[in-house]
Image (cartoon, rainbow, N blue to C red; front, side, top):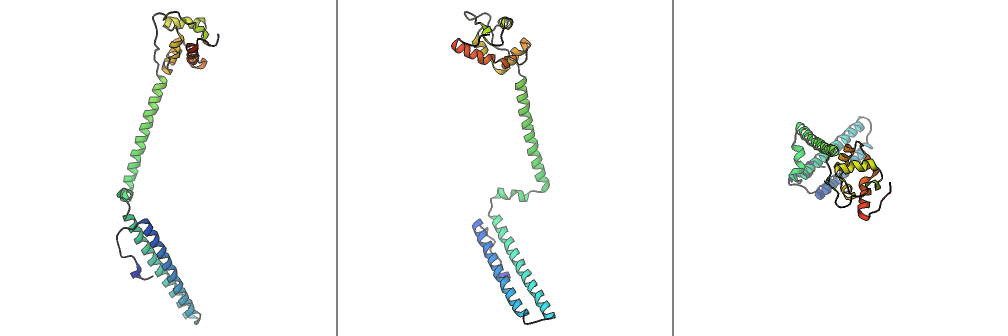
Length: 212
């Protein structure tokens, strides 16, 4: 490969043109290497002794020179290809190592802070207690709350004292309200464990439920 075969154009290359240039360069190098080897080996068969060693050195020198030219051509084409990339794709190449480390640290720190905030919010939601809506007196006839499995006469009386008289009231409890009632009754997890809210929804919808 001769030096004048190296690309002289400095305009950007498209990926397709880059591939074509690379294939062409490999083809040129292969042909040149074959020509050198054929020529040198043909001459060396007619010679022996010190001259044969000199021919071998000449062959190696020619092949290395051709490989060097090929390598130079390849990197020139690579540079032209990179020039065709959008600016944002070339940004990492312009950053120093410390800038990349600082960017990563900031990214990780912001992400960790966000996760911590979300975890704190979830923890706050889990610890939140909210008193349910209560009534001063029943809205008409009070429901028999003992029809809900897990509510006996004592629990029913405590709920009535609180202002809970109807299935529809229990059916509307949120998780925070459920935890408040558990805390009020001194039985953590009892409401959810026995499914009071689900039972109350069925009873308020059709008037039937599990007999206690």
